[in-house]
Image (cartoon, rainbow, N blue to C red; front, side):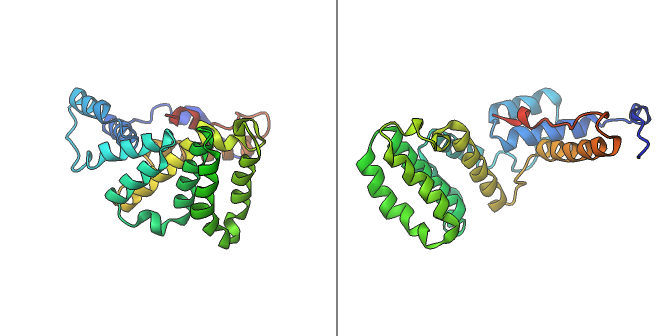
Length: 216
């Protein structure tokens, strides 16, 4: 068993500049422009080059996706990162499915069916989309789709996942990190503490995770 003594790390110095950069990375990644500007001003940091590039547009895309207005999110994405959605089939399918769900939520069942036949059905040529297509089509069988066994497809956390994936894909396309430094740090911390938990046994500290603090 590994000999682990937390006291060995009590005097490890933490660089304030590193902490500020981690915080700023999170604010920029999640499009908190006003907060990022205020943070830079109050800390006296040097403004990173191009850190505000396309942040307003990225934020609009994220908001539209979260609201279920997927077609507008796709339009702005094409403007910001041309051909991204043509190359990322999974992401394009997810966004089209958001529009389908939005039509169902508005009780536009006929329009939803027509949209599924023209825009979603072609994905059925690939086996990887068959299960998802069946799940979405199952929603049509209910007068109240949000009461169906597939109700999770209509929840905000489903839209959140797609909006986050879209934001990450856009960032990667414009050569920015897909994940903020804070998210990467927490992922690394989670892995380390899980390993420590395994090494120390069941009576040791429980696995550590702060992912819930990254929710918008």
